[in-house]
Amino acid sequence: MATAGKPIRCKAAVLYGFNQPLKIEEIEVAPPKAHEIRIKIYASGICHTDDHALSGGMASLNFPVILGHEGAGIVESVGPGVTKVKPGDHVIPLCSPMCMKCKACLHEDSNFCVDNDVGKNKGLMLDKTTRFSLNGKQIHNFMSCSTFTEYTCVDEFACVKIDPKANMQEVCLIGCGFSTGYGTVINTAKVKPGTTCVVFGLGGIGMSAVMGCKNSGASRIIGVDINPTKFPRAKELGCTECINPNDCDKPIHEVIVAMTDGGADYAFECIGKVDVMESMIQSTHYAYGSANIIGVPKYTDRLTLDPMWFLTGRTVQGAFLGDFKALSDFPGLVQDSISKKVDLSKLVTNTLPFVKINEGFDLMRHGKCVRTVLIMDKCDKK
Ligand code: PAD
Ligand code: ZN
Image (cartoon, rainbow, N blue to C red; front, side):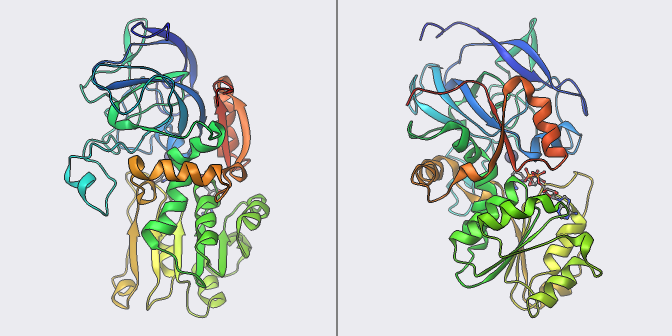
């Protein structure tokens, strides 16, 4: 492409400090160096993890930074040595990169590469620099990718090629939200047919977990949310019942234990609140319940656990990105989206032009969407 090897000037949403609005700036994206890929982003979902970072929920964040980690785009150019993709390929940038050399990447049960930036939040490429700048000042990346920008640049290990037939405005959600909720159900908990599941929190992650429970053949799927406007969509996706804890005269776990003759087979926390996580654990059956933590709490929060909750036979576990190994699993999820085995359009309740990104955050904060997807450009290149 004509832009290869040259810096690209484009719009990006820059965060300068905690709890500030994102500022649309014209930044410069340097050409990719060896083993790096520059990508034109077409669509990006807004995930609660972006707001978690923005509002100071993570222990550290280097400013200025370009957030966003749930995108889809087309490779614009590649640096020397890149073999995985070529210009023109459709891709998902990975917040869950995989080096395929470390112990975690090689472990059959892990997707948590030692070189990912999750929790470390250095905001740098592997060579400890960044390709984003504004007036010569460096801007950090986020979770190895940054998708709230018209162009991004990632290390080769943070990118996977996908089928160009996929709808970018839908499959961008495979980059984080959909994979996280759906995967925790099918890969981590391994929900069995005929069982009872409870999903706490019916945002993008929780709704994806509901889809996973439905596709796994659960016979009863109970959705829990303090925002009842989420209930119709949750029922459409598979919830058999929905409960608002604020309408209950007992703690929500007591309500669920009573409804399910001793507790659910599986429960999922998709909010990021430790008090709800404690309820979620106690809402599972004491003898065999499987409690699954997905939500990301504030870094200073701690769970208060009674060991007796587990001595009787319950298990509790957590998952990053639904335990999907992005490099090998995402192309298959994209095929599931194309074939409508999973209908990701049901998760995209709102779309907005990229420059309205702050409105998109407000929609999420006020519970007015399941997922808002920002459109950087319409993709007619199939
Ligand atoms: P969201 O804001 O779209 O949805 C959260 C939902 O929880 C909303 O519908 C709220 O109404 C509901 N809620 C809030 N408080 C309560 C409560 N006390 N009881 C019941 N319902 C409540 O967020 P999201 O779906 O984008 O993200 C959910 C969490 O998952 C968030 O903590 C995010 O950081 C985390 C996440 N984890 C991973 C991972 O890999 N583990 C990946 C991506 C996101
Ligand atoms: Zn996310």
